[in-house]
Length: 343
Ligand code: XUL
Ligand code: MN
Image (cartoon, helix red, strand yellow):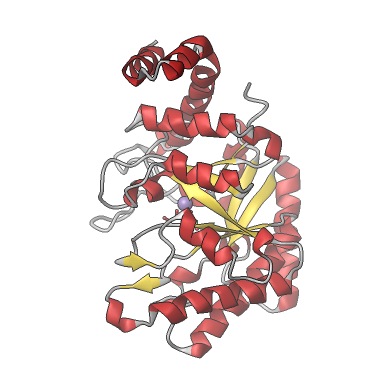
């Protein structure tokens, strides 16, 4: 069974444990060392931010960018890994302090588009045709600071320029309702796919659903996935978990709400997701209290829980499900689900 789903994570998922109230607690692991963890933990693909692949992207010439990205591709090949996607990390640059694509300053908007075009070039060099756009600071701290109508148009315009820049690249928007901004302009997959239809090539704009982001929006992650799946636009996932409405926790998949996790796996199974060739991506963080030598368990545990839940979905008694639905006895169906999960 582990062969039909393929798994990925990003190098940022092995971290030093800093939080807003305390410094790092674990030593920095080099990128090369992190790459070694992928196969060891049973993962096949790496999710990249542009500057994970080419540090200080903005300071590099086109030739340097091409050469460093090619070197990264050689490193991946050597480990038997592929790049799943590249995502431009606009939110750490001082120019993106109040957003990139939706900044009030036209020069900043241009920078964001140009930087993302370079991220597209990196993606090509790494051999992937998938870009992820987490629109981190595309929102507001206070509503009066931007014109939201313009902001939506700017985002569609940025996508148009990117779609023109590369006629084969696909762009998956990763919705999130808040954090770092108070309000983000693209909080749900509904918003993301509606923006797709404002662009010149809607078929190449889809989505990535992160469990925690959907929960922060007060929505069920499996329904968010289903909405994208209904139009063939779930191009990746960031599985994790989230304990209520607080900061984005990126907890181990299934660790807070096993039934919610079960339903995410169920919807992926119903859609035949492995047949799409897309990856099961994780976006999980080790707890800050975790010792350095045990700070990969959030990754292997998330994958193990996912595979256990695949087994649960596949072994759920279909006759019971059919009878309960026919009789509209959802109390019985609910108990059957809970008993099945309890084992
Ligand atoms: C932020 C988040 C990011 C994106 C990648 O909440 O989830 O890690 O997934 O840019
Ligand atoms: Mn994510």
